[in-house]
Amino acid sequence: MIPDRYLSPEQWVRKGEWLVTTASQSSLHIPEKLAAKLTHQGDLMKTGDRLRVRLFPEETDAFPAYWTELEVLYEDDFCMVVNKPAGMLVHPTVPDQVETLANAVASYYIGSGQQHRVRHIHRLDEYTSGPVLYAKNEFSQIRLDEAMREKAVERIYVAFVQGIVDPKLGKIDAPIGRDRHHKQRRRVSTTGDHAVTYVELLETFPQAKVSLVRLRLETGRTHQIRVHMSYAGHPLLGDTLYGGSDEHAAYQALHGELLCFQHPMYGEQLEVKAPWTVMFEELYAKFSEWNA
Image (cartoon, rainbow, N blue to C red; front, side, top):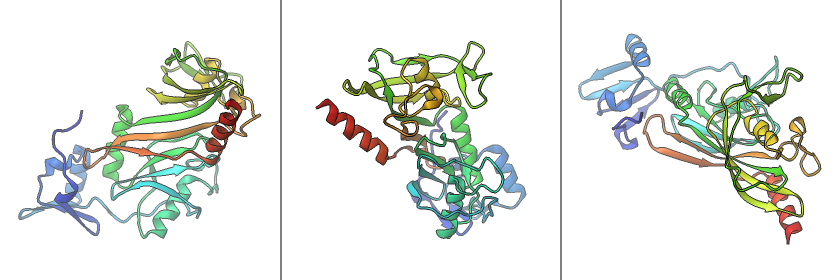
């Protein structure tokens, strides 16, 4: 449920670790448990007509810094959206692994003089490119995690898939579970978790027997798009795990195109676009030339 009134950017100032405002506490929409915690710690107080809230404490992070070029698509005091390249994990999966997006974000914070924990709100597969949302403080993390649970964070993807997709495909509603015969794979299974993917045909390339589709997730199961498109008979180019050919792409041709979410403090609906990768641009140019 969207609250009726929010704090606007003009109604507060940041003074170090503190947010200072003359607005009411209710306009901040601080979750009840967090408000109680802040009050107990002396981090939420009223002085005259000023409300002071320590929303930006200096924090240390467990992720070692790993420097690499980082494309920041959106950033303010509360959240940040980073464009993840294909081939990079969102966070480490084994000890001493540092070449991940989490470590790169830790490095970015240090380099820009910010002291935040790295708090990712959602994940992308290693070889899926696109926007990843980060919360910069506990308040934002609680609000954005809640939005994820309520399916209020929308992720829209584009993909090159094998075959000519029927424009009537529209919706894939098929439960997804683990594949007992392959620990990395998922599969459509009657005993799996509810999963729904919406499919929009954007363009076909008959000479290459390839289609370009836009995909929207209603649910967020592991490998959902990859499993559903393979199940529909149109595996992603490069996705050899789910039956795709690597003739045109060395890895799955899947890119997060758009991330839509409500700003945790202001309530504004944000739409953050991620530009196509070099691989996507090259595939589109090649298939378009074949069609000519």
